[in-house]
Length: 445
Image (cartoon, one colour):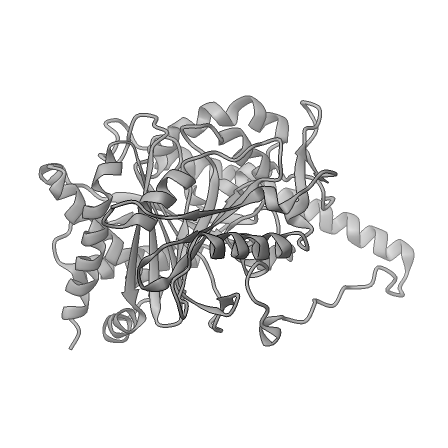
């Protein structure tokens, strides 16, 4: 596919996007500094971020709509001004968490589809002289891995972190031309048949996985309101649990969030009808496809979260068993692979149907739990070290809560994105995440 053409999955994210379901992801990075930063520092840092954004070819792109039956394309914005995408703000609100309060308002604002689909903002006035960088990227522009790469390009450069470019495979390899043509045709035919079989399997699995009404207690009416929550956990606790009871760090976090959702739902008076919730766990397929950063290369697993199970170790065992089953089957099978199916549909189908179909998301899953990879090397902005980084995942239509997790240095950072009636309960959910991790860690010998 040409580099300037949106894939069918990219188009799907555009079609879903509405004021009540903005399809942008992002992050909140918190930096330490040797002195308090005021509004003048915010403007200077914003200018620095804009200067670096000017050098990013992907951040210069805007949408050019194609004909109804053709994919949209990216084109460089001839009037691109990175400074118009980077703002500054000095918090003065008398709020228990002024950064979360301001970031919530900033993130619930949709991106302008007529301009390059990203924004950034520097926020000063935080306790202990810290400042924050807020980032917002539309899901059509990139997936989580692509967003992380774009974000790193705005921070201070770390030469040792830059990987060598991949060696391109020459198209002029010597060989018999007729044999090469026949081999290519055979490979294409096998791939087409294989993808057709895979697609039919995914569609069948989706029909089987669809759940009848009533929907889960996390389903909400459409709402433009969002509220973010930030939770920092210690990587040492996750490692202790993994060492004692097995599984992967991701399994441990899924179990922690299952425990948090259990506590949260009980606090909402839903405890008398608890049943397993289903999480969409996105899986990157970029390595297998060999794609460069940019656009979306995704599949997913639908993992049942045992919120109805009281014992935290039993929850961890159940999550680990579920994820192991998914991994054995691979990311190209099962109902959670519906992004793969979406990628294989013509763009015109998404324009006609995706907006309507997306409202049935709660039939398949209750929440999204995604992990955003970050390098282990120390990161900084204008020399100020990055201390915390909270990713933000968009909410599907009618979904009350989504989780995004990043491990950086000695911290596991959980970004909570809530909508609808859950907006006023994000503090209780954040406390439940901390409590769930502590409870699980207490069981370690």
